[in-house]
Structure formats: C-alpha cells, structure tokens
Length: 224
Image 1 (tube, one colour):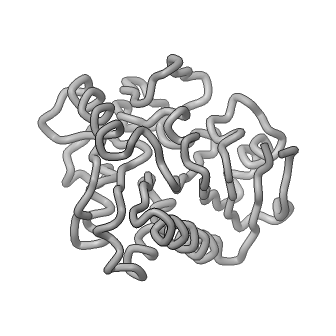
Image 2 (cartoon, rainbow, N blue to C red):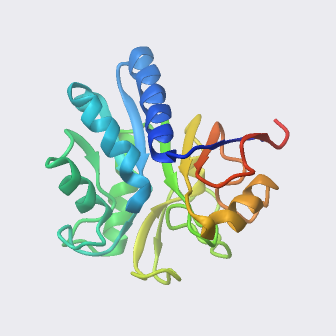
C-alpha cells in the first residue's frame, strides 16, 4: 500500500490543513466524524483544527490512540494535555483510562465504547511516530492477538511503562491516517516506513500521509 510523504518547513501547519480537510469531508458526508488523536507534539494539528472549527466539536466522536495510566492531571496524560490545550472537554469522548480504573476495567470499557459509540471504526487518525518506529503504544516486537482492539501494555520501553492503546486493527479502519514525524532522530524510522518494513505498526495503514521537515521524503512511495 502506498504512503504519501509531504516535506514542509512547517509540517505542523501542513498536517493541520490536511486534518481539517479530512474532517470537513467526513462531517459534510456523514454529519459526524470519528477521530483518534495522540499525545505529545503530534497533538498540535488537532488542537489547531479544534480552534478553527469550534462549532463542529459537538459532531466529533473523539478518542485517543493511546493513553498513559497516570492521573488526568499528570503531565504525561494525553487526555489531560488535550483538555489543558483546549480549556474544555469535547461532548463525545471515549477516554482510554480513568484515574480510578484498573487496566482490565479500562480495556473492557473502551472495547464496549468503541462498539457502541464508534461502530468499531474510525474515520480519521492522527499519529506521531517515535524514533524506534512506534505509533500509539504499539512497539516493534510487541505483537497483539488477532481480533484484539484494545490492549494493556505493562512494559512500554518508553516511560511511563503502563499504558492502554488501540491496536493496529482499530487504526487500520480509518481511511485517512495523518502521521506527523519531525526531527533528524525520526529519519531512520521514516526510511523503514518508506521501504514498507512490516515490523512497523504504521506500515500499510490505509490513506497514510506523513508530514515531516526532513528532506528526501516528498512524494508517493510504495505500490498501491
């Protein structure tokens, strides 16, 4: 499956525009849009879009691609980071972790929420990528079971170790995937992605566009 690479001096702005266009198209077609977002610096395009489309937020069904098992007020909470950036919660959110929950409770609740609220599918995903090639909390060498849609990770190589993540099976339901990967440290992972390395969780995701500030990656790579 092909991957589109966009190299820009301002990849966040480029990703923001792509995300806004993707959400606009789904909202115009379906009246609602199902989106999963990351934490960290890759969250910036969604924060920008949310501020550009404030009157559309009640038509978004939002969840996170992964969450750290830390309190909502902790600096490592992806959900907390979004709420702090926007100054509000969205009307329809599926949190991956609540402070009082055990991991098993979180996984069961999220699995049910994906089915009931999201119809077990996404329209758009926004992703970041680590230097090791991980997306969400899907790390190379950490396989998931067939049919598994939500997974508890007890041993993330990147702290904090305890996380809840959507699996690649869920991410692959989105026909549009936007991945933001900036900085020289990501070059090796992007080269592997361009080569179609099957060990990378992002390899083969439908409608994948990568936005980066690294030269040498622009254009469509791979066979469709």
